[in-house]
Length: 80
Image 1: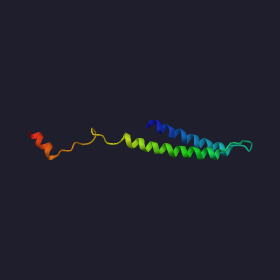
Image 2: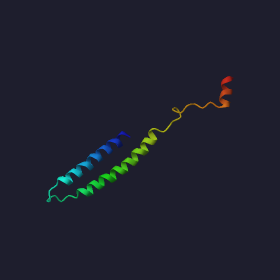
Image 3: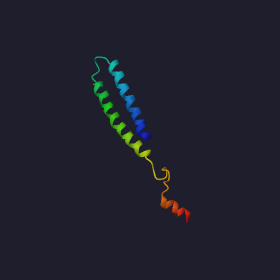
Image 4: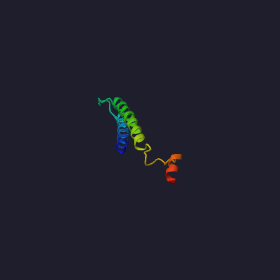
């Protein structure tokens, strides 16, 4: 999960970099920074979905983390 968080940080930084370069570029630069910004946003969206899915798995309750439920039959077994 931490790897996905780092990817999200990197993609966000890359998107901001493309935006700054787009504003600062000269007329002679033949790079479509807008396309690169859009691509970074699509990447961020895909990785964010993976991050949510990974978090759901990582923080899902497990048998050892759930409180024990004491049923009537369990109470009877304990009395014996």
